[in-house]
Length: 343
Image (cartoon, rainbow, N blue to C red; front, side, top):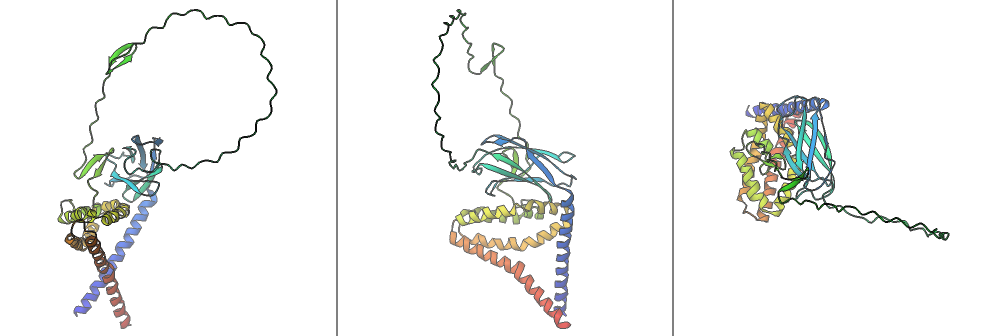
């Protein structure tokens, strides 16, 4: 009897998982077919430190409470900046973002792509950056043609002597203004300094950098949306493992760079779905809680120990593969075998 109940529970779990996957595909396709983002840069070619203005609109915009986020991708497909477009989006879906071009990650000159995400809606714009290093290759030059023989120039005819210029009055000496003043209509006036614009107030956990509000230290968007707050113990555990253990080694820092590139390509969209659908939020929380619990194993490694961090990291990955892939596959195989034996 107990074995029969376990089989029925396994079949129900597989059915619910299939329904959720199918509903996700249908909803995403229906929304993406009618909505997209048009954006362009009005700054032309920019150099290091130049202001960069990007404006656009969300076609078929509906205010669903999404956050408009962006990524800036370099010509070599590396993420150089991640952030959120602050301020209200217009009722017709229009928006504008002010940035400052350049920085430590803007290393190569060329076309930079700015990708925008508003829920499942996507769009991009290109920026021509001329402030980085560009490889220079010598251009081939054509051989110079040999000069053709020219006829001897005729001797110039004698001309009448030019008249002497009439004496002119001496020009007045220019007036030099002192420091902090400028010449206005022939009068030295004090230069009025413009008042600095106040920085916009960013929400908790964000800092104002390069004209936008960016989440401090990067954020685990999916887990934060699932647990409802950044102060949850599970979020604190993720940050402790990332900052104190993984990033304390060179291999861990390399892993985090590649992981962030993949993670931030879909995390803002999934986090928006969690905020919109409480049932989906609870499903994500139940799905990631065992994985977050296994990460506590990483706290056993000494800070800066490449061998311990690498060994425990591989163990955690293997444990999650067994828990999320091998175990469901084994249960499915057992259920299939049992159903086949009854026929």
